[in-house]
Amino acid sequence: MPKSRSSRDIKPLPSPATPTVPKRPPFNWDPIEDSIMLHSIVKVLSPTGFPRGLFKQLQQHLGEKYYSAETLRKRWWQVNGICEVIN
Image (tube, rainbow, N blue to C red):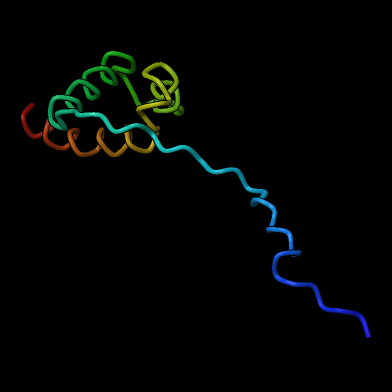
């Protein structure tokens, strides 16, 4: 009968095949100031309409390290309603 292997003979499991996604570094920002600046940038870039892919372009220009297109889109809609009421 063969001997069973001891726990010391068992090799550790290999590391997972999926790479870990690095998190964006935290940074301080003033939500109102940042959102109003974003609103102004969008209005300057597209005064007549709202072109597709604008938030992706802004993400590339402002830096993918700190801004995501979804975050920019959310901030735009948060401030857009307020700016329209003021006008």
